Length: 386
Image (cartoon, rainbow, N blue to C red; front, side, top):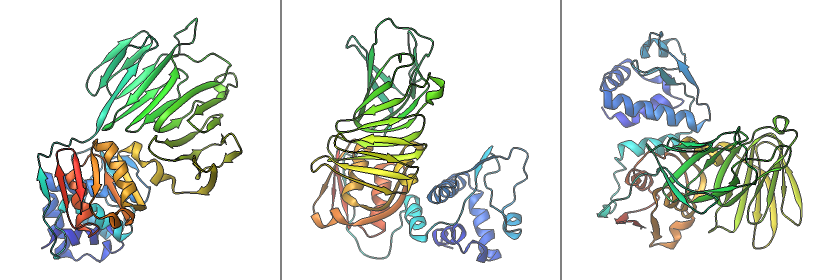
């Protein structure tokens, strides 16, 4: 029995139409630990597609797949772990794209085989370079600890002590290379998640009662700002190369890469005022402003916040994205270059949810097996799409 269509059926709106024989086969297949891990990953991806990713403690729960289906309740899997994922039905196209990430079987159509020459492209990881006020640089890498006066890092995040006092304002700069990501907690308890190829500058300690100001020099960052009520009314500002965002306490995402001519500001919670220099816009939750730096035009519209911010949770969510834009995202995370041998492919629209923990070849096979490209070649750190 072919397992791929069975899982598609099971995780789609047709889940309850599975026959007893199919269910038994699926249960037996899941008994294999490797298969169980793969299946759980699909449950997570399926849940992420619908933005309902809920974690439950089931340490004392007695799990039984067939009983859950018979009672038409949410399905729980993986008896030996403390966490499980509840899922909702996802659009079949997204689910099939996610499934191909692991099965990579493709269709019966004839396509050129991938050409791989010295594939040494690693998956992105937690890493950054911290530049201190005096210009000295400290490499922060996953698994390595760093400690200094009022600063501590475990290699995944950088935390500043709010109790440290400075006579003069000192600034630090955190640079995230391609193939990296990092989390920093500023001295006012504001949390910042930084995406690949990003750089931020901020004071080691904020001056009490005065505007808390940081600069996103380039790249993408998600901010969870500590409320002004906890800092004597001090507002929080984020400067970029062409705009200024002022908040009182909220969550938002800014994408301002140096190789793009637009700046995207997406509000998740609260309220922000975006000052473009020539006009000012106030955003409500689920709204996004797009500033075109070249022609100074601004567009404000409602967006799917999940698609815009899922990167910080280890997921790439693409909805109607052109391949050229998707490859730009992947090139930053995998620190590689993409070349389109057929320029028409650049504008092909793609829907899919991909895991940031996957090898680049798995993701390329996902795209290839959904017939968006005919073939790809990997030559060291360059990938050619055909």
